[in-house]
Image (cartoon, rainbow, N blue to C red; front, side, top):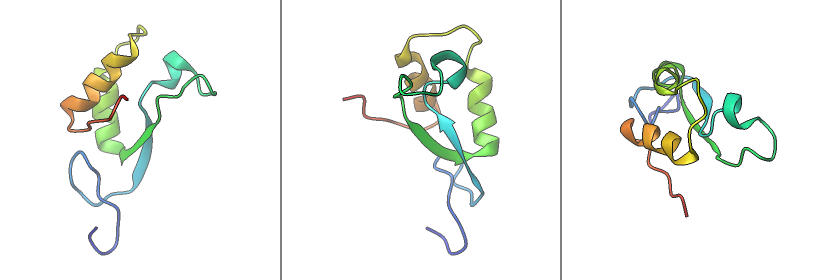
Length: 77
């Protein structure tokens, strides 16, 4: 990690992190039912990912696929 900050795993820049819910709160809620987890990414990358998420709820695997297009690979086992 560079001196002075956290590095976004998507863009590789030193920025302030924000939390991205892997399974969107608007589709899966924010309680115990949303067990998809959270990844830390910068706000700019978060916004780029959010643009790709449709308004209609999709199967959980769809959201993992979107993240993989941004270089975030998660173990589903």
